[in-house]
Image (cartoon, rainbow, N blue to C red):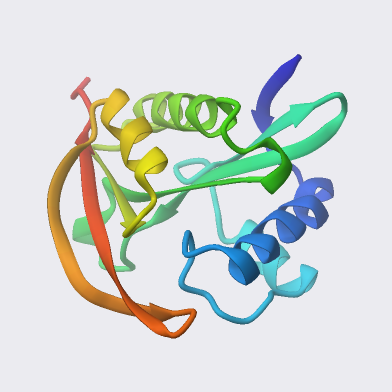
Length: 165
């Protein structure tokens, strides 16, 4: 059974493994060098109550994670967060990313964020699809915004305005 829960420091090892696999084998992130567990711990501790990290767990093992990250350090953007979702390569295509995005969107509503933003690399049709399922809309495409695996890639921007309370 799949469980979604808040991430803890003890999950950072698996979060690091999942992220590093994405760095090495996908365009889901434009990072090109693997991260140490210490670097990912820094990333983890930079999150707060308004910017949670959650994990998907299956049979006691973390198989995916998602986060809301501060969009900008300028205070006018305090109501905006960037969405990130990563799933262990052995569990992709099984609805894990969909469930993580669903729960993460609910978490954003709970903490009264106003705006969720996603940057999705070209070719990641499943990510675009699940964002559409949860009410994200297309707001533009940044042409050839990053280069990975020897080619320039477009980045699709998607946004969801959360209900005001």
